[in-house]
Length: 119
Image (cartoon, rainbow, N blue to C red; front, side, top):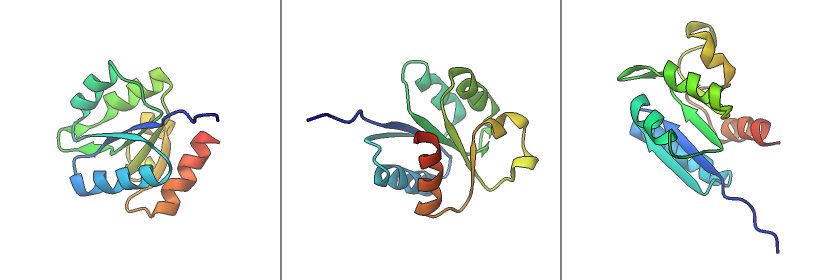
């Protein structure tokens, strides 16, 4: 029997209810491990010693814009989904390097974007 590799994801959002909802969607798509952070600095620090298959991130956090995180993900070639109420044209260009999903989104929206990334 061939074992499937474990999928790991990171969610960065300062609204815990939204983060937990995203975690649920990721688990329903087959992710085994989902880590949640509410700040960009925590996420960046954690990523120094951990790898993930995808990051789902909010652009505007209480601590400010998550531009440094997006820059790190682009450098590391880590796929990411911007899950935000902002429109792509309203934010820095670096965020458009990821996939875009506008809040609020249903499970089908998450699954569609995840299928694009992992197909």
